[in-house]
Image 1 (cartoon, rainbow, N blue to C red):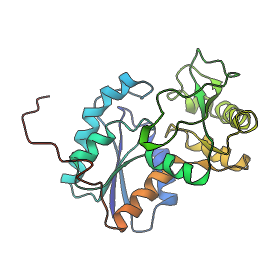
Image 2: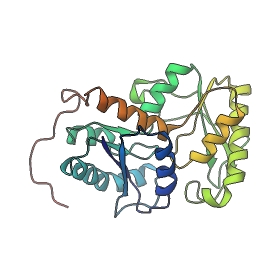
Image 3: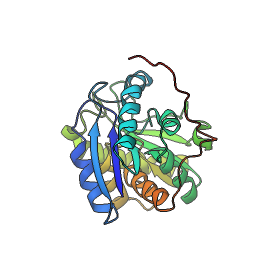
Image 4: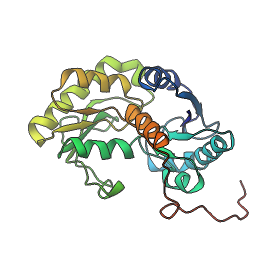
Length: 242
């Protein structure tokens, strides 16, 4: 089984931590290649960044099918170009958020999202989740808690890892105690180490979206399944200039 992981940003700074986790949790026969888009944003923290990344992400996913891969993971918590790529490919493709959120709601009923926040975030505030209601056919999380304020939440995580881990743990505890959360989710795929820290220090399930995406795709491939072409029809052939 050959899987291509497309990281939809123009930096390879996440590749090694992704590779380390995937080597630990992949099936023995699975071969994994990890690539970045060559053009696009260096991180995705807004809808604007998401739009910048989408076309380059689709093209890398299409190359994966041409190169004979069995499946594709789009490695970003915002799942950029996921539906478009499901339409384009005849091999299975998953994001890292969609399968993780579906799993979360099998394991709990009150989901809270935690993570680091940007420079204008008040970490003592319980941030309600906007824009997620109904996505993937699931209810919105009950709260979004930020554990620590850093200048660039994704790009700065390696420099402030200890601070981020402790801040996210406090945020998760508040979500459980004050919001009634019974399951915790960190949406960004770069937060592998903080998620492991939360798993070790909390008594509720903490979803590791990167690992869930891999195991979901391996399962789909082994079962001989793929996204429905009724739900995600192949786009018609036409001129598309770039």
